[in-house]
Image (tube, rainbow, N blue to C red; front, side, top):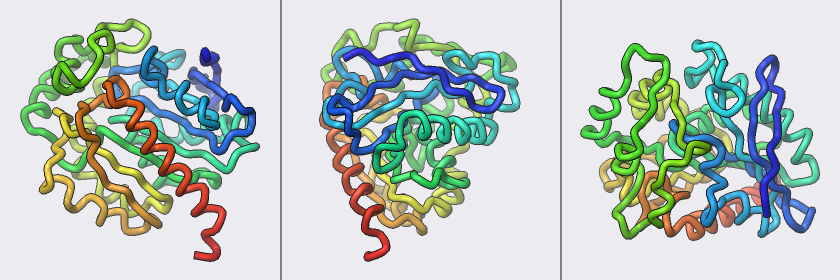
Length: 294
């Protein structure tokens, strides 16, 4: 199955993305995947581990969206590339995406990786779409690995964008060599791209902002940190308090994805991770349908 390129009008900004409808034409939900920094939407549509193909084959329509600063929206003004600058653009995009691709399903479910997970959480906290079922976020923990934080800080300069060397990317975003197919760590010009420096700078302060944002999220949250995430700490001390900060969420799944690094979707266990997401989606669908009785 090949995804189709789509264009989403978000006010005066046109965003690009990749869409794949449920193969049975009766989608359980509309999944919207939001990529992290230095990646495009192709991150979710990489051959041999495509999230789009996996989910569509099991009855979910899915759209991977290029955030502002990526895809066709590389000329977005600088002040709209901050986390808070991107949120209203993406809110408009979600409205269009729902109207065009999701109304025959139970609702929208967000899947956010790394910086995409941080922004997905902001979307869930600030005037969320009325059909938002819940969200998954991964690679955006509670406490930074200080060594990696310093390394990333050194990449942020006066230049508006940062192109991360593939060797640095592999060290930071992949687990041990046995945990991912070798071809997944090769440079892909459609997937591996420059990122706005402001994104990397804001990501370094995310741990301090997380509790404030989490307290305003009123949908179920699946929060996963990979075992070999070299950006975020995955130890008990770093994660013990995370579920508690989602004080308004109906339920929270806090977990570790064993045997994978930061970019789980590019690892051998990607399919196992996708199964966890879809199991959580099903819980969210049932919860929404019966929440008045719970």
